[in-house]
Each structure stands twice: as structure tokens, then as C-alpha cells.
Image (cartoon, rainbow, N blue to C red; front, side, top):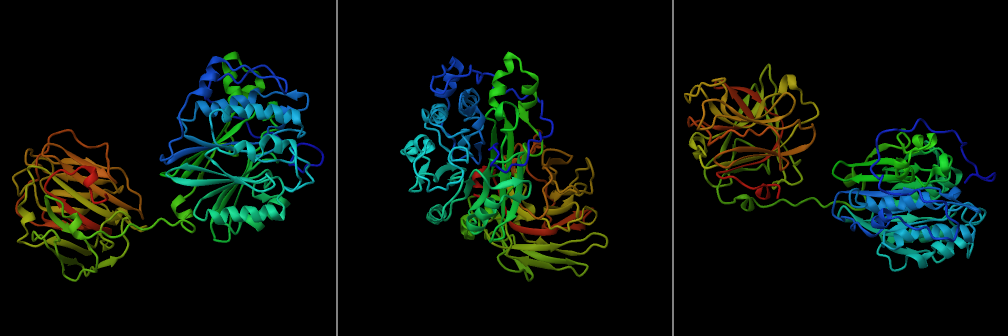
Length: 612
């Protein structure tokens, strides 16, 4: 976009580029000799293998990558045509398609400098690398690809001849184009759902806006990435046209959560709130002012829906591919960009961000009878506030009674783990020094009090700690514990005053299962990792009669001992929910919410946990 009629932000170089050993693509050539506009470039054997090999994207993986290529105009400028850098970038995407789960490529316009037929012939041939593989991608016209004074009603152009709708028809990702051919939309599957790329012309006409709105209306539950040539002009600032695009299209369409544009430099970002009150991330990407016209650098948007983040990196495959040949000084600076504008992360709670137009339905409550699998000896759930007693839904008589300390109370909440069978929880309000709160205890006649589980067991519980949880007053409270001490059972190894079994939370909010097995004097412990506040967690302690494994959210923890552990020692005393005894006296009470709790007299596989 670098001619006198463009309004750019200057040619100031960005901060020093990274020089890490990031040569993961040295097998790619990307350094072919400069080719003429029409002559074919012979692919070396390695590049041919990259072009022919690889696999289709994993559409179910919650980690995937969107590749972005900004202004390549200086590589296709009249007699100065060099397709080698862009070919290297395209082959790089094929080579890394499986490792990075690359699902789509978006070019941001200004493919060429003058919009001439010869220039488009050359870049069209380069994109044939993706065409031959059926890889999904989108392009759009920048101001150098067409007459900049025109909008999408300009009629026929060399751009349209090379990259009009006819090029993409029949491709699985192609959704359609506006009647003029300059705007298109593309659909790809990733993370088990559909995503839409809306590729818009340099300048939208009234007809273009109407077409774009119609596309969004036809895909009301699909998250949208809008690509266009001009929008953000620098950090936290839109251009005049960008503001028009925001006001007339982006702001009122909550589906658009990310926009990508080139045209200006250096790279920048803005974050705006749309009409629904949600954040839209607007990114400017352009490297034409850098060495070799940007060398067809690509930006990789690595989506991770489990970590709720998009990790962004910027690399030059052409320079990476030249590394074995020895790089010049400027190439060594450009091999990878690691400044704040080029390598960063964007935190997005995807489920929450998309909930306004595509809400995730809450999992319905499941009847208690479905939780009574073979071997169930106790099952407690809290569908309503507790008065004095909580009935054991297994029917085995392990009912719970309410115990209050220091005038404490036990509250109730409809809050619950999203995969919890029952849709309610008890709100424990424990506090130490002075001790106060309320907890639950099995009745004296409960069969559970004498059970030793020598053939194995599974103990499951859901819990959530509040923001005001304080280790000085709330640490080492029990979620589920068995009363009676090691000393009372004649087991004096370690601390004889510790209870016979407790699933507790440390001062660092680490779940710990500490107990005395039947086959040893001392205490056996399993440790989990720190569990953040204000988050629901599911714990499961599983013993197969020989070893014990602690699971957090269905995942085994690292500190699971390999020593044999059989059964749980008993002195015929009650179990507690939300309480912890030391030396036979209540010592700490849980501060947090407790959901369903189940005890089964056998080892369960993860697939049989209450979360499934």
C-alpha cells in the first residue's frame, strides 16, 4: 500500500527481531531462483514431498491454527516478480499442516503492486500449490489489486479473473460470493464446530454491506473472523473507513469476534466492545516495509479452546528455508519476529464469548437412580437446603446428620459443576480460630462406619472454593473424611493423632488423600496440584485393592504413590462431609461449596465417574 495516495503510518522499523533457534522448516527450500511472471519454478524433491504429503486437518481437535498472509505486493511488481517467498510460505503450511493442525489460510489483500495481468498470473500460479491439495484459503482485493477509487461494484479486473468465485467453486470450504465476485465467505470445521471467514473487498458498497449482513443472518450461530484490507490503522485506532466498517457491520453482529487487516504498518491491535457488550479483537498485520518486502511472512493464529487462548506467532518460511545456505545480516534479523506486536496471546473464554449467539445448553440433571451403579454404598446429593438430615440415596442407610459449631450455619446454592448429576450444592462457611461452621456426619448406625474396602473403592466429590478462601483460616479442611485416629487403631506410625482417612485441601489448595491402609502402619498419601478458586472441581480417589490413584477432573495426578495400599482402616466411627478431626476432635470445617458425593466399593474406570 506504499504509494503517495495511501495514508500509512511511516516506515519505522519494529523492535528487534528474535534470533531463537527456530529452524523447524529447514527442509523446505523456499529459496528458488527468481522466476519470471509466467515461467514455472521447478520444485525440489523435498518441496514436492511437502506439497503431496500431509493429512487433512483434525476437525475435532480443540487446538487448531489459522494462517494469515498480509500484503505481498512487492513480490509481484511489474518486472520485479519473485514468487519464491510466497511459495515457501505455502509449502510451509503444507509441511506443518498436521503438527499445527492448520485449517485455513487468509490473505489480507494487496496481492500485487499494480493489479496487472502478468502479476496476477504469477501469484495465481503460486497459489496453485494449495489448489492442487484442495487446501482451504481466502483472498480479497486490496487497493493495489484494483483501482483504489472504486468499490466492489467496479466490474471486471485481472484480480477477479484470477481469484474470482470461479476459482473456489467446488472447494469444501467455499461458502459463496457476492454477485459482483469481490466478497466471499468460507466455512471450515475445527474444534468440532463450524467457523466462518468473511473476506471483504477493499471498499464495500451498499450492496456489499447488504450481502455481508445476509451471510451472517444465514449463519446465526457461527463464529466469524472478518478479513479485509483496511480497518485498524495503528494500536487502538481505526482508520476512517475502518470506523465505517465497524459502525455499519461489526458492532451490531456479535458473531464477529476477530478481524484481520493489512494495508498499514507497523503491526498493531485494538480491542473494542460491540453492541452486545462483548470484546472484538481487531488486528493489523503487514510486513511489506521490512526486508524483501516482508518475504511473504505468515502469522499463525494457534487457537486452543481448552486453554481459552489464541497464541500468535510470526515467521518467515522463506528465510527459514534458506538457513542451511547461510543467511545475510538482514535475513538473520527477519527469520522470526518476536516483538510484542508479532508474538502474543489473546485470552478468550470461547464458550462465554459465543454464548450470546450460540449458547451451550446446560447439561440437565440426572436422576439419582442413574448414579446407583453396582457397588454403590453411599450417594449424597443436595437438591434442596438441609434441615437436620441428608438421606443416603443408595438406600443403604448411610444418612448424614447436621453438626454446628460456634453458631455456624450450612447454606444451599443452585450452583454446581457443569457435569454434576445433581443441580445443587451445600455452602459450608467454616472458619478456624475461633472455630465455627457446620458439617455433616454419618449416623452412628451407618454401615459405612465399619466398612474397610479391602477389595477396593472409589470416592468422588465435587467442590468449589470461593474468592475469599484464606489459607490462614481455611486450609486443611476435609471434603470427605473418616473419624478415628491411627493411635486408636493401634497404628502409631507417623502422627497417631491424624484421622484414619481424609480427602483434604492443603494451604495451597492441593487436594490430598491421606489415610492408613489395612496393610501398613503409616499414612499413605496421594497429592494433586493447586486448584484455583471460584472454579468447580471433581475429585476421585480410586483403589483397586492394591494401589490408589487420585484423579482431578478425570486426570491422574503425578504424586500417586506406587506402594501397595489395601483397604481403609476403621475403628467403627463416622465419616464426615466438610469436616476434619484431629486427635478425635473437630479441628477444621470446609469453606466452600460441596456437590454430589458418592462412595463405591470397587475401583471405577474414569468412564464410570459421575462426570460421565
